[in-house]
Image (cartoon, rainbow, N blue to C red; front, top):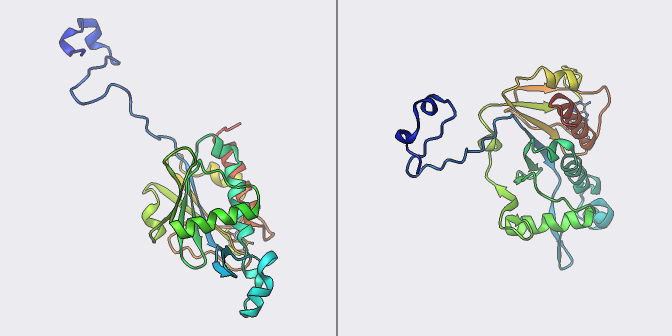
Length: 242
Ligand SMILES: C[S@@+](CC[C@H](N)C(=O)[O-])C[C@H]1O[C@@H](n2cnc3c(N)ncnc32)[C@H](O)[C@@H]1O
């Protein structure tokens, strides 16, 4: 073990001299000093039910007559929106560069899900729905070949899971505050994490009484997937991710 007394006078004055203390490893602790981004996908439709003998996530393609018999509008059941939203985020350079910290899904029914950045989202809607059914039944999903959980149900409220130093930004086409995303993110505090709240529903507004700002990013009503892609591109430019 290298003791401070073993160093020559010159070395002792050197700023980078490393002194090992019992029980404290020399290897530097890797801290996430760079700010990152969190996404909250609000009011997502992930409703599971037994159709025949099989427990399934309801969607208008397969379950329209089942839903109509129950006096429900099949087009209120849209797992494709959350599927597309997750694919957009996970395929971004922002995620590849390690700046995505987590995605939270809040379903229409108030279930809260944490999705880790290393999650492989199935490309087809059918496989994605199978994954979500498994999650709702088992409360978590592990990555294959490794013991870490990639998705898990977590307790409400969402605010309990967000970092203290974060700015929470809600998106709504009806917000009177119209911004250019690129300018907006470059003006953000560079030491703060950013949390974007985007609706994963077909109609309606996000429910976010905890947000710091509510912005509109286009004069059109965009899909959640388009909004998320635009946020990722704006952050990639701002953080010089090529
Ligand atoms: C299909 S939209 C929901 C419909 C609703 N007209 C709206 O924009 O709030 C899905 C989500 O995308 C986001 N969004 C869509 N267009 C937007 C816009 N022009 N500005 C900001 N956010 C928008 C909102 O978060 C919205 O909840």
